[in-house]
Image (cartoon, rainbow, N blue to C red; front, side, top):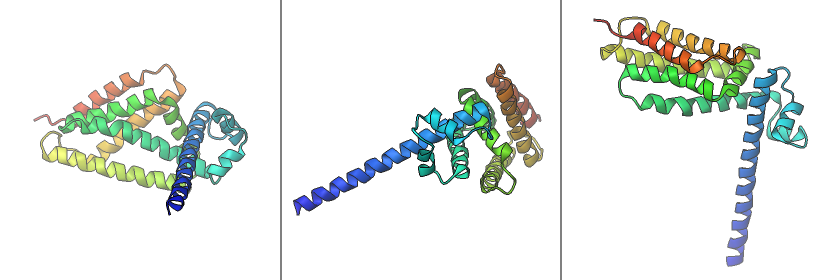
Length: 214
């Protein structure tokens, strides 16, 4: 009985190690894909270039872990979104008043761009080159709309609390998102752009635009 239990534990341990190794390999491939896409663009980011950057012996390793190019691109988008959420959300949640939370959101997004330029460049490349009906694009648009809806509700709460003035929350949220995205796009073509300074300027601008004046 003891021998059987030991054998079972050994098999479980091997499966766990294999799973850990596979997860690590997938992450390694995604990280390499992000760097290659950022450097050479979406269309020139071949499996050969990604495999070379990841230190893989062949492109077959990519095909083993991902069901084709589209699957890998979906994971690139998902990874950047996970990184962005983990980077920005704690900054926002560290504040209680809505004015400070809005500033943390804007500055956090552009601090993210400064800290992880390849991630933002890669997701911009991927999303720019996907067709409107592509499942990855559809999923991203749906997720982005859900995020915007949450931000709209936060602005409405700030208005009811008397911190923000009277304006259309949807117009404001989309203006903020567009301003942030424009700085990110500029940063991909202007490596000397001070994105953190741009973040502070945008935060000041939208602080004035949202603040209750009477």
